[in-house]
Image (cartoon, rainbow over all chains, first blue to last red; front, side, top):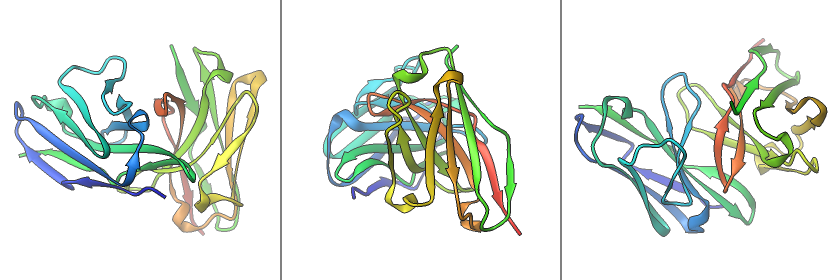
Length: 110
Length: 117
């Protein structure tokens, strides 16, 4: 089973700053099946990025995803007040079949 | 608009079963797999399994095999997740979500399941 590790656990930044979140897999992941989600308290997660680098519908272009193999990155170019939340990466693996999530990175206000 | 609406909160005793529903609207129900994800309070997301609403085929995370059953009623565009032999560790918010391109793009609002004696 592929294990996802996210770092840092918490990222303390100010509005307007750049956020760089890391997701590392225990073995190679198909880029087609690497996604990022944002979750705010009391809300369901929201899909931000799929296929490692494609923005989901309605997602602002300050969010971008990159990476391949075992190392993936979510970048928020300039943090807006509404971006302070928890971010999860997710992968789909065929052996065994199924999805796994990383433990999350909390982006909070410095 | 495209949405998934889940059933309301449940309180169950240890050893009981719970069945959560997820009603789809705004799209063709049989077009996308439905996945179930749970989240204990203050914890991360845990994938439970998937179901193809067209064929009824399912796949469950190893942790839940033998305890979870995912079904559907296509006539009312509704998916169901039943979890049996409940224990306190199953207390969580349970979400359904559609799967497109290997990512979960539409999510239900979540159903709180509390297991307590």
